[in-house]
Length: 71
Ligand code: SF4
Ligand code: SF4
Image 1 (tube, rainbow, N blue to C red):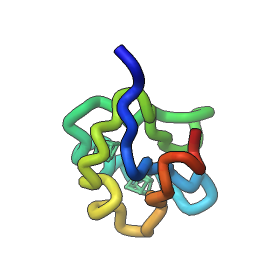
Image 2 (cartoon, protein in one colour):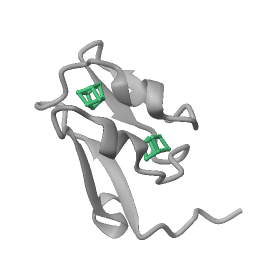
Image 3 (cartoon, rainbow, N blue to C red):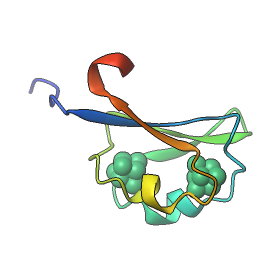
Image 4 (cartoon, helix red, strand yellow):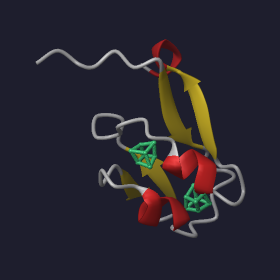
């Protein structure tokens, strides 16, 4: 199956993330994982672009970027 052609993708800015896990609790697609034992990251293969993490993050560490720019 070819990869989905989303308009946006979501990425976590590791320098802003304070590892509170709010986004992990919001994500219903199990797409957020711990990167380097330090901060959270999004698996773009699993991410359904629901934006729940983007809305929920208390420190605005989740960025929404055009899909092409992230691939
Ligand atoms: S909600 Fe924001 S600060 Fe908390 S773990 Fe997720 S990206 Fe990091
Ligand atoms: S946009 Fe939705 S599916 Fe993707 S990582 Fe955030 S909460 Fe999970």
